[in-house]
Image (tube, rainbow, N blue to C red):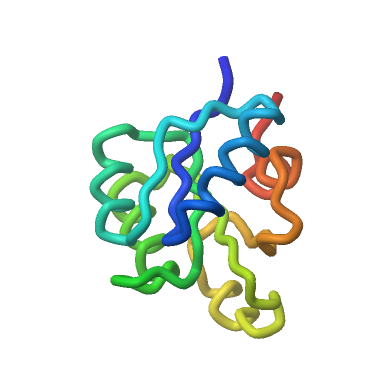
Length: 120
């Protein structure tokens, strides 16, 4: 059975692109949302295995969303993503409960699987 994924990004075009990449790599995308509040609620409803979560959202900081998801359901693995460079986010990434970070330009199912620690 394939790992299930929720994509959280405020840009619909990026969500579509991410869905194509992740599904082509064997992951099952169960939903897409564009803001942090919807992400927290949708994780509660759908209980995906993974969340690919943008750091910059219109209503909430992605790091805060990752903390809320981890508090609600520690089994859900969160992978943060951003168009910002890793160095700009390093201190916050080190403190985050997310499994890791992938720059948007490097997003692929293989990277998500590796960073999230998915066993196949």
